[in-house]
Length: 273
Image 1 (tube, rainbow, N blue to C red):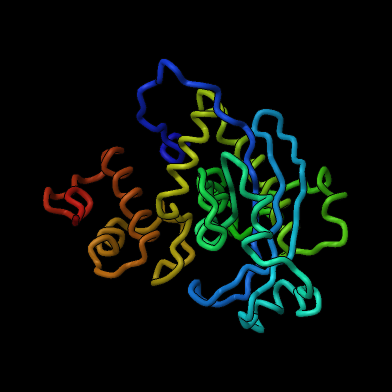
Image 2: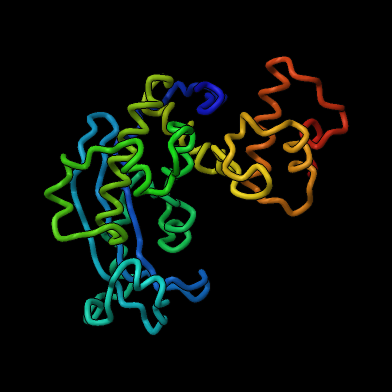
């Protein structure tokens, strides 16, 4: 597990204060368009206290799409109708109650962060789940609920009347997921601050995949993919960033564990700038 959730080199501050333990776990539903044309139509969040594991303060709101066309596929997923959005506040007003938090977390944080534009530390539970539960069959939110598995009974009262792909429902599931991730990874950390530092770094890196998502080794655990294929993947121009990052990780592990040394001009040893 140490290679999946490595420590972050740092110099302790003489004036360090205890890290805030509250994380606002947030989810958005949108019109389902490209970022430039998209609109947030629902926001939901709950607060997770990493120190106690308590999940509280549920918030949800619809947002006026301000003329953005809702993609039929997106509407089929979240089932938010035009009638449900009548009278909803504009996004600029709707987002304000969600903004005051030291740390945010979301299942696909890059998606929610780009649309909410809230400043602060962001954690990606998808990338963290790949580190905490690398052998789970799939790492989508509802797959993690099923296969980890996650116990949703403590938040059942807050889930009433909702369904998957509504913002508050998904935020609650993500909060339970983050709590389980913390239970798994926190024992390797000095304290909550150390966990947050590591988790933020993992969240800002490409995803460390459990399996390849394409090619002749699609669906095969990375530890079982031949080194020559991983070397090809690293060197191939325009390759998926997550796949390249993952291939580099496994090649380094094999070098550390005594596999044949890589040549000095290999892309893994001398990454392209």
